[in-house]
Length: 85
Image (tube, rainbow, N blue to C red; front, side, top):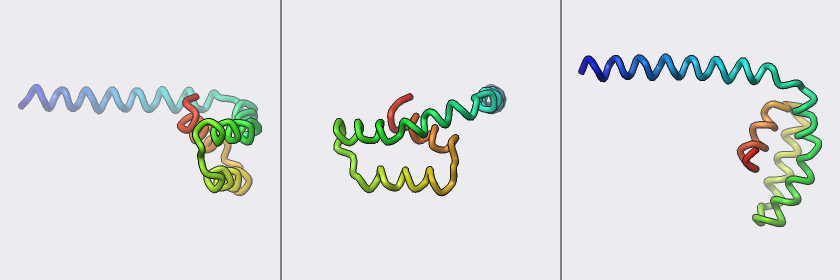
């Protein structure tokens, strides 16, 4: 059991280091890069609709989210998850 506990502590420590590294890298991304992704969303959405047949409702919701909150980082995550960036 002692070995399992040590492994669990090491795993938690590794996750903290990984999280800190990701957050530091995230802060270094310039806002202009997010803006470029936001500007490309309509084109990417159209391509996704043609390729996958995604609903128009999903596309409209994503646009409303962008305009309401101006959350470029949130949009970047959405684009990355949806299109594998």
